[in-house]
Amino acid sequence: MGTGDLALQYLLSGITKGSIYAVVAIGFNLIYSATGVLNLAQGEFIMLGGMVAVTLAHYVPLPVAVAGAVLVVTLVGCLLEWSLFRRLPNHSVLHLIIVTIGVSIVIQEASLHIWDEKVRSLPYFTGNEVSSIHLLGAAISPQVLWVLGTITVAVVALHGFLKYTLTGRAMRACSANPEAAMLAGINIRNMRTLSFGLSAGLGALAGCVISPITMTHYEMGAPLAIKGFAAAILGGLGNPMGAVAGGLLVGVLEAVSVSRMPAAYNDVAAFVVLLLVLFVRPHGIFGLPSGQAVREH
Image (cartoon, rainbow, N blue to C red; front, side, top):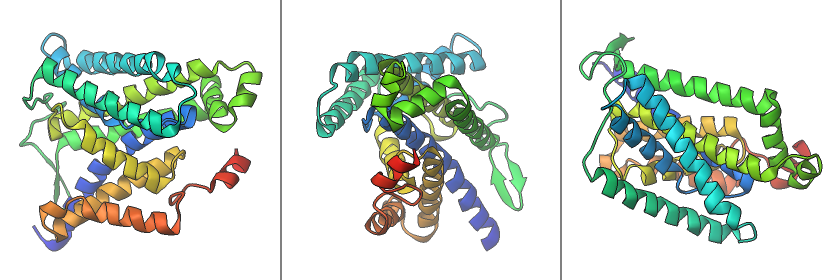
């Protein structure tokens, strides 16, 4: 494999990883925009999606297992908002962040007891681990195409939902001006529950499509949450399209660092760039300063 082919291979790997980080970042943005909560348990939705789908796949066809996992995890997200965050309306941001860390730990421990520490995976949606598609000298697993295609469709559908549907516009109104939204008759509590459910369902879908490639285990959520949070901050917290760009950038930087540095420094490049960006633009690459963001809304 030549230098150009190798570079393309790393680029495709980075885009695949970055698309997952983008989904996590979008989940952060959905919940933060509607509730003001930075949900550091976001990565656990991806882990739960994969684990539930693996379990269901023993009893039902794979598409039904994936759909069932998305539904179950969506309900888990709604239940978390209803049972915890709705009961803590007046607590500080720091308290809410600590709550989400606690939720992440509880979900991890519960998953350990339910599924133990074994690594599991769904079967490849098409082909297998040895089949690959060759593109300009780079080898691509068919599952990578499933990952990129599924996440692209999910992101486009979510964008359309938020921009063109009445419910999506209501969620955006709650984000831009909660008081005005409440006066307009929008049920802010229900919109917040919906944001948790959408975020959880999107994460579960991502967890299902990446399971054949990355495998699924109970500890995978926290690293994904950290990378997704970095992507959300890098792209601009509260900006869904910025989250996509931030996720792809983090993924590509990570892939480039693997090609240039020892594996022990796998995470360094992305976070160095994140720190540099935050020194120059604290609101992220595509974000707006708080005052200007309010005027834009």
